[in-house]
Length: 91
Image (cartoon, rainbow, N blue to C red; front, side):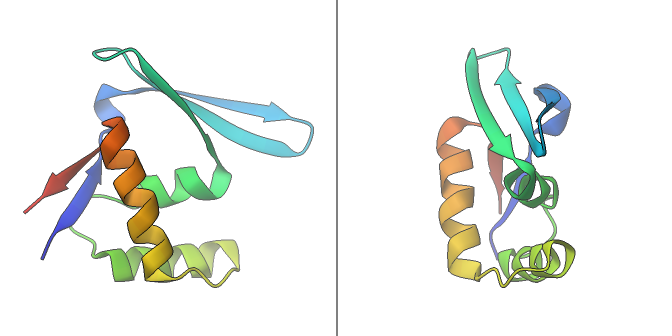
């Protein structure tokens, strides 16, 4: 089973608020890549610990955010984070 890990320890993460909107600016000092993640996106990324399946991540995000999140949506999102270099593939 392939799992994924969010590289939190090697990234610079800044929490920001604009009115009622919360977002996180993720910066990779080694590649100078920078990206904005909104609250649900950041929550999803933080659940990528290298052990949880994407199915489990989708269920946890659904429960925590009160939304119905499909595993296919999580898969597409994770692939974007992998392409940015913010998430690594395990296994």
